Image (tube, rainbow, N blue to C red; front, side):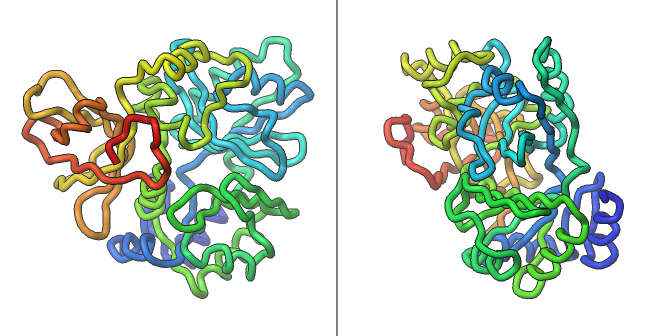
Length: 353
């Protein structure tokens, strides 16, 4: 199915690829503009999927993740983190369910590390973990009219972020966004193609950068291979976006995560901003203050080009440096990181917005 879908995107939809990822459809600048203002849809080939099934699957996952797995069913998905014993995030993912199987969707470049670590702790539990990426065609849809368009294409879509609707061939996940956003997981090529063709009447296909821009605008972080084990959940605002549950039982790193929350010891948090750089900042790139070129004051979480120029970014910053508004990319005199706003409440979280 993977090769058939790629051929369809390239031959029929006009996709241009890099490392098997659809990066644009002929006009990347226009795609960025439409992603901000219009109805767009994207191939989510940059995301991988891990399947977890077996009679002990729910109990096993409950003991591994930062969120309450018992709240995940066929009608509800969940953002969650897989941490090291030191509370650092190895993998950040959205968890959903079809029947008795749980699925973790996460960036492809962290899939192997997360899968191997999970398998290490299965022990005697009746749990099977597999790379299920090729089982699904992954499509993203967003825009003011996205819900109405999906209603016309496949019936009633999920109404609220976190809601899931399942059909015979599709799982539709509503995810947070400035405008309605959806992730759709198709089990068949025909179902995916029908949806794509229907969306293509009033919407426009966009590549990876445009889709990731909508993720940044939603204030949703991703953890990639080069930022794995760099952040604890609160550094990425997971306590603000329903990615961590402080009332559930133990999981790796739980004591550190809970202590940070209840003792108020967090010194870094995630902020949104813009950078007028010549090249796209990469996840993990350092940010410095004017007065210190040796000790980084923050790290880029993700950055993508913005249609108004420069790059929209999420970054984990020292709270003091963020409040001072004195941050530069790469060096103490590098491009300025200008603070922006996040689309969700930060009351009591130490933000200046």
